[in-house]
Image (cartoon, rainbow, N blue to C red; front, side, top):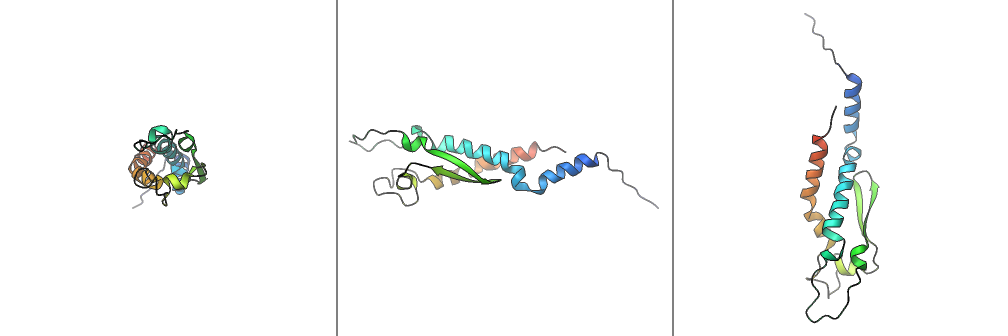
Length: 130
């Protein structure tokens, strides 16, 4: 008895499987879209600022909110950046005393958004075609 398999579209199949060979490259566009979305929804802009403390006369400049960006270090690896010189004091893990408990911590906001990252990755997989 002889059994033969005929594989049609073998070049297309090989190319499609090749795209999945390096998952970090495959998911990179979805990952990049999520970082941009997360930055704009959760970090950037004065809309993400907490209310001023009662009786405060300080006028906010918006520099902190407009200083957010991301940098792709390699496929699917990104760094969230705030270039304001005082950013770590406001939203870093070692906040200054006057911000602690009032301002959010950036890494926590990013981590809270990871479930949304999963939806981006699932969408990329669902759109994968041979």
